[in-house]
Length: 74
Image 1 (spheres, rainbow, N blue to C red):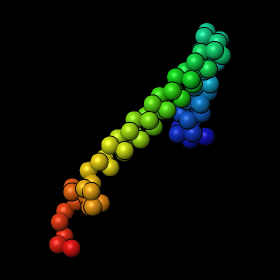
Image 2 (cartoon, rainbow, N blue to C red):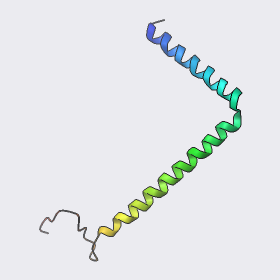
Image 3 (cartoon, helix red, strand yellow):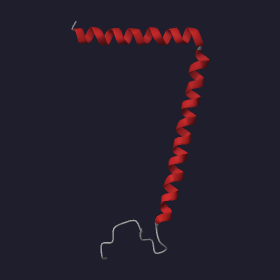
Image 4 (tube, rainbow, N blue to C red):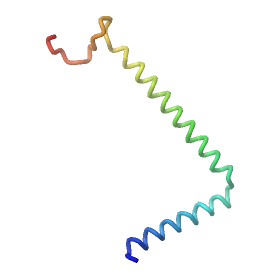
């Protein structure tokens, strides 16, 4: 086993031990709560992106040409 493999294996084992310690200390409900909070954050970011996208569509003139685009003489 190389040093790199040993270090990776140690990290995997340590990560598992840490996760089990948190599970024992805080319980399964903790993971459910942070999952819900993460999902809510994603929903908020998607909504904000859609709102920003719909706001950028106002930059077009009545004829449908984008006033922010460079004039190409067409």
